[in-house]
Image (tube, rainbow, N blue to C red; front, side, top):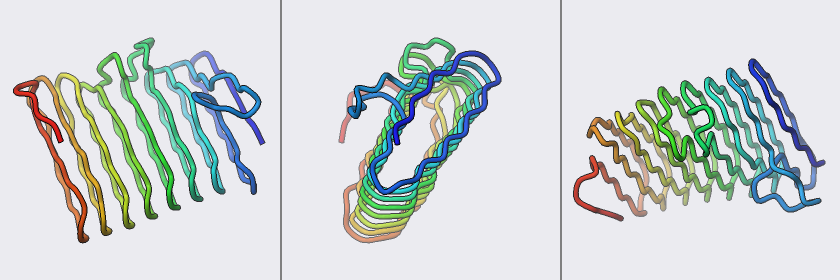
Length: 217
């Protein structure tokens, strides 16, 4: 099953529920099957609920707007999630709330929020249960919260938080062979970070830097 949508305007609500034995695609960005056009959701006060059940599904595309509420659920293995939120600063991506709930293994998630702007009051929550999952997310924000709860082995979390007033990052992880690369680089050196990690082996790199000397992992 292939689905694609373009939504324009204000006060939109979208619910999509996919299940099946073969790969489903919503989107989008880097999609292949049938040469699909991009999933492009534009507007303010947008509520988006995506449920993908099964393996090798994809949710890909761009979301442009302020006051966006998104719930993304993935139950299965080898799924892909690649989303840009307001990459061209059309609205600014302010006051957005994103929740990603994952149960499964070997999933890949890439989320970029406000790539050329500074989103205010971002609230991002990841709940991950499974092994060998990869999370890579960037936020260019002016105040916000990122909470990541990961349970399982061989999971990787890469986070880059940039912007002006900074934000709060909290990682709660249980499992072995973990890999963390966490960077908070706000201009006002006003970042907060908390990590609780239980397990053995792995690589951890944490950087907080208010645009001072160049450092890296």
